[in-house]
Image (cartoon, rainbow, N blue to C red; front, side):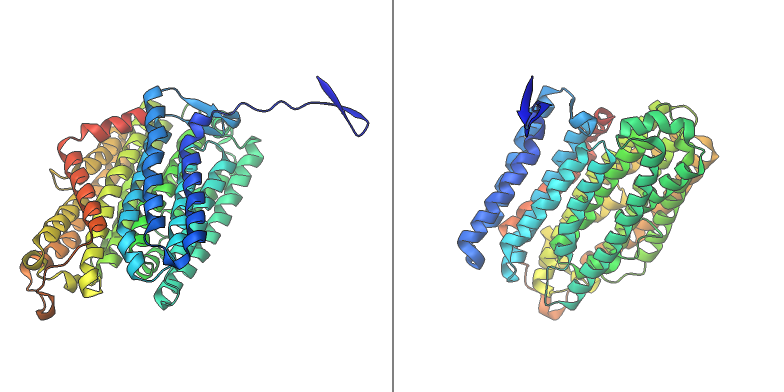
Length: 508
């Protein structure tokens, strides 16, 4: 079929078939963002909680197409393979949406009482979430990069959302500078990979990289891409922006950065490593697993040692987040070690362990930050001394925080033990001296982490409260709901770990 245009005969272009069901979660989030914009235009700063309600309803509505896609069970490939909806992407999409929903619950009263621009806050939060949802399905270097920047740019602004607070401004600037630098390094590495493979599709890279994995340009490209992602997930030695950013940003934003934003970086790393840099038979793994091994060992060790010295709970959790990121990198190293020996089935199981660890860590950390926000409502501080005597004044909060600290330390029957279990299983299954050595280092660091997590518990249960902190803390309903949801999930995962275990097994 032809048409005539300006005197020339040209072939008409067929409209591509688009699977709207596969795109439905992203479409619902975009619709929610537009609804928030309209509500903000109508109400301005007089918003009586309207934008937060729209954000919460929109996030819950996003779970409906996620559930229908999961029930359907079919893998959906769009845009020539650049966008894939499968069990892996759906599990992570559901996690990102739920993490953002809990962040909204943490933010409702914090933002309202702080005289912030509410509409802009929730708009930026959902825009970052949109990037995460796209990230979960991205199977192309360009799509991955665009999704990662859609996450990063709104969070740069959110980190500096307290405009009149010097610490918040500093947090935003540091996060922005490091974020731009990491993006440039990562993009340079991606461009080298594209140059040597001739494709941006991860499946195409996987097909071709095995035969050329020893070429210097390929090694440099992989190294630069990994360095860029190491900045994004605050792995040592690219971590130094995280403590100041976490401490200076508004606390709900810190919770979001430490969980959802960090998970977005790890999801991008999973996608590019497993679907691209592994090679079709695991033959390219030797080019990158030693770097991952070093990042995991350094992040676990230095993150834990720095956390031991902190007196501010938010800053402690920032270093804890660096250490936990090291634990999450352990299965990456396990996947590379196993794949280099031709055991791609073990590599797939190891990547499933990363997904499980991400999901469990997200729940634990969000719960801990919910309690910190509650305590700060009375003290105005996140110093460890502000938790003194919490069990006597507000025992429910003390019990919840004890559960979250114990879960982060990996103590049964709370969910953290299962995250540690799948991590250790992955590296032990990988075998070899390098694998066992990393497992021993992870075990030592797990013991070290116990000490700083339980410093907070000691303050709450065994230290007397200050004279001006004898009254119980009054908690808003949204914050109570966030603590209740995360507490229940931490307990359920610990008692019934097979629920999350099946998610990891189904993802790969």
